[in-house]
Amino acid sequence: MQGRALRAPESELPPDLIPHLITGMPLPKDKAWFPAKTHGWGWGLPSRWQGWGVMFGFLGSLLLGAFFVAPRNTLAYVGYVFLLCALLTGICYAKGEAPSWRWGDDETP
Image 1 (cartoon, rainbow, N blue to C red):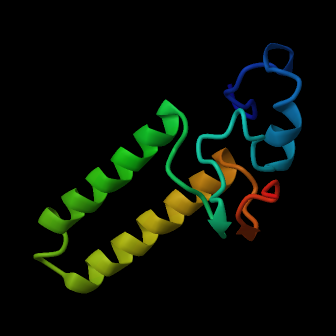
Image 2 (spheres, one colour):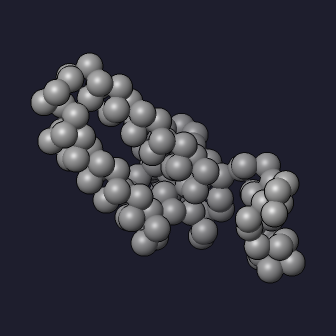
């Protein structure tokens, strides 16, 4: 099975998600694991169970590293934390709303 991607055929995917899979664009608000923050840049707390799973996995990985990596080599732990943060940021970008600067509710009178 060389050269074939292991994912569902496009006919089985919802049509509104196909462009996001091809271009790597962030998901729309109703499908996003991580909603955009109301104020500032970035993402808020997860809005779906998948996002919570990612967050608990991130925190668990930090704790495991603190117990097993940090006591042996502090510099390796710092690199480990940077790697985990980069991975979390990548997942938030792929599975969250598009990040942009937000200044609160635009609909306030």
